[in-house]
Length: 379
Image (cartoon, rainbow, N blue to C red):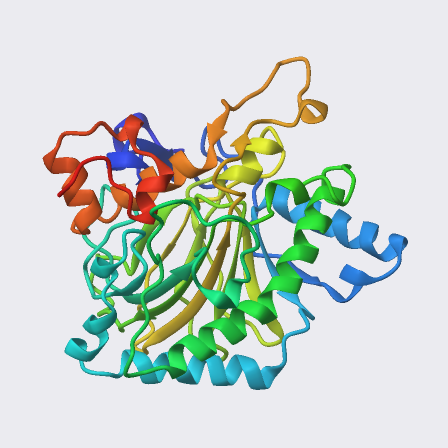
């Protein structure tokens, strides 16, 4: 049994403020927890009521006990998967100066190309060892078919490489392929909480989403830096497509402080996790699990996560039907405000983050419409 003097911890959260003891069976405080990630077939997602409820039961167990699961039978063809990753590899192979023509610095919402070591999701670590290309919800991108009134003064949030138009084509082909699955999963998650299947739909009319094409270079085994630091997701759920045939890099933290590997597996397109917002609305029934990326495979790693959150105007709070006698375990949170604070806090070199820091504007006052290019004072 470990003594207090030699106890080891995993740290995460803002400034490493959260510590989880690393425990082995027999240690004080050890508890049963997951040691692998469950695999779920989604063939029944659009099936009979009985099939959908059976699927929801599996999803509930995974979202409650682990916060992660693999998704098989998602309805996305292999040809699209392979061509999407091929386009990503071609883009990241371009010279840096070419990629920087679509720099995230040109977007008020931190969209576009992000070079190596420009951000850190875990604020207690060194900068993340990755490069990425991000797109997300944008009133002005025709491919998203926004039907409402565009906010006055809104600027384009997505930035695209003019000399490599294949990337925009590939990313939106993926977006349109993922949309039916994410809509179906949202309904299954409602069923998993014993709610009506449509319970969440009014909160996702034009939801915040992020698609991030990621390239992690191989790291020496002795390198203690991370491709992506330990964190939870500021999303409702995340669907991570890991390149088929890739090695282990994604790791999930269990209750005893041990990292559980979540490598790509044959036949399971998505590695899915429930995020902060579903943990809140479920009053903690679903868990938002800490995870990280450490690429010690000796290979380049490519992945494509799809993050989904409610509309930016939605206030997230525990659903009353899911609150027991102990009362709500989470405060009410505005989605847009939470999103902008998480994004800009982890991207300290972005012009919007620099702008706010130079003017000493408190984080608690940051607003979502600033992500649309409407910063409070002229630069």
